[in-house]
Image (tube, rainbow, N blue to C red; front, side):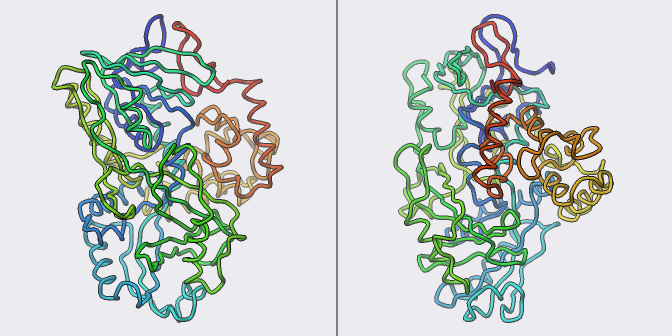
Length: 545
């Protein structure tokens, strides 16, 4: 165990410097940053990593072109600055994507769109992403799937990300730097005392462990306000919850591929909102999102029939071939925890984040709560959060994540000197195929996308497909399932099929059931680590038993 890892042995409470509550992108990013600065970090996530909002986004690394209409220039600039930082850090799970906006004269005027895209191009420096331009849709390949009345459009750049894998890569890096990360572990009580927080952690099997932490980070996402009002206990009656969240549901549908080219679309709607239509998982198109205010438990968020109809209707305004509700093969809904700002329209609520620090006037253990945020700015949010923690603890430690690779993102061992993120990935695919010619081409590309430079750890000494073990479902072998269990906290079939990958989209119900049964059987016959059951049991990552 690294010297600065949480002290996970011996009787009595587990001691750490910082307890992070929440295993979404913000919690995992903060744990990574803190651990990289040398603090002892423990993260507790009640479910799986990215089980909720952080696996249910539109999966874009973007500045947010539409936020310019709400004069969110600071947010857009901050996000635009982060795009290329992120693209360079993990070119296997993030890559540049070109967007086409067909011009509808009944919507925003062409001069306003040109102005917005000009600002989008110039609010932050670009090294990787090409600039915007006008396009003739009567001749350009992206015009073919569209109705003939759309004759002109605009093309600009943003990025794509596998959101759930981004969370896991942050968690892996946090662990590599000494953090202890516990999934399926709920914080049921956190009491503030003068110098420390005293918390109770409860595992899925009901076992409990006491934890002391010098500081507490509330990164519970949609549950951040509820955590402060119902779980965290102040030392002397002060109010811990001073902000309110506005929960906004964003739903998406997935349909069979609507177009063959590699660009995405951004469509303007009569209600002044926009939706995206994005190439997805080779065979599909992802369409979203909605903005519907949610009242009630975020855990039960589901797409409604009206949302499905809305997305189909708006996409059909542009595509020659209508998108029908019967075409939908999968859908998902994520709950955005937006900071309440009294905006009447959910679409207008700010996507910026606020980090609220609280030390009870210097008389209590530090608390940092994360309010709002978007996936594109997670790294900067985590950096700011770690700076705040250091300031409250009186221990300044320098930032380090700008320019750092995420696990699997450093490809030089496979391809030599890096050039551009998108071409570097293609070079990786070629290198993996050349080194392992027995791997099917489709499998080479999928594994390279998922694991990047870590693909060598998965393949190990295998010299044939037989060496990867039984094929549990098409293209999914026991070696990969074991790798996910042992290194990525995967415990169930859903963890594998819908978060560590999107293989669930490509499999039949029977094939998905086989994966689930294999994972259940493996958890029983070969548990990765035991859950903690009493005060003297060692606490480790991956409590899957």
